[in-house]
Amino acid sequence: MARAVGVRVRYEVVPAAVRAWVETSLGGPVVRTDEQTGGMSPGCATRLATAGGRTAFVKAVGASLQPDTPALFRREIDVLRALPPAPYRPALLADYDDGDWVALLLEDVDGRPPDLADPHGADATAVRELVGRQARELTPSPPGVSDNRRLPEMAERWRDRWAELAGAPDHVLPPWMAGQTARLYRRVATLPERLTAEALCHWDVREDNLLVRPDGTAAIVDWGMSCLGPSWGDAFMLALTWVDTPVFDELMAAEPVAPEVVTDLLLAFAGGQAWRGAQPPQPGLPTLADYCRAEAARGFAGVHRRLG
Image (cartoon, rainbow, N blue to C red):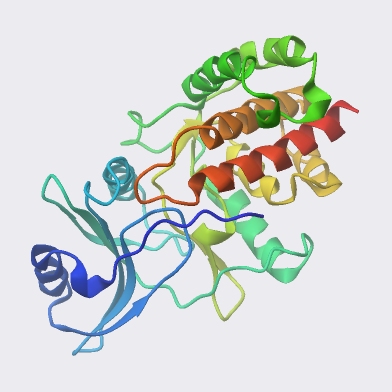
């Protein structure tokens, strides 16, 4: 799977007010930092330790680095405030928002990114167990998140973008779609009314947002892309890891959803990625367009396979 990486800044160069808030929240001066790499969000992503031995993880971004990311951080704050503690979800310790910079101070997790190369390996199994357990916990969606995004409305935007794709240059869509965009658009056009919004979905279940602890259990981070959707929504997002293989089909066949809904959601989602990949580069996200194009190609390959 391709990766998109946001432009990172080191903890010591974030505004002094943010660093002062961190030390006040942790009750002592920060004496050790461990900068983290990977992930789409630009800004600071740092593991911290204080002189007193307390540890935490801080993520912080300002509008000058990327104008849209602060809104994602605010959504994550709202979600984490509403969710009860869970062993697979690092707790929100404190949050900061001065109108420009937004920051979250989170429980530190002693873990590593999972190795998902083997869909039946120990890491993949631990992550699937986490996703299933959290889906049961968050269906129906907990109080306090009712104003979050809704997947049916997101699918409406993807439908609009599909209308634009019909006139896109040939390289934006794969060759097998030539002459079929109208038929495929009809599938996407009816999707919003076939999607539900009963559960809170993380909706960004990727290797970059998962950690495996030394004991083999998994944890999930980064709720900025969350939405209200079907109970199987995060199983779908995790299965995208293997979307260009029949493993995707096997995993989704075990979920309570009609196969044609899965295919059409995949078609709509891949179209949305293709549309984004054709847009001008965004500040602070230099590799996002490449990532979206690669993910669109993998998604379209999955659609092709499922349509036979």
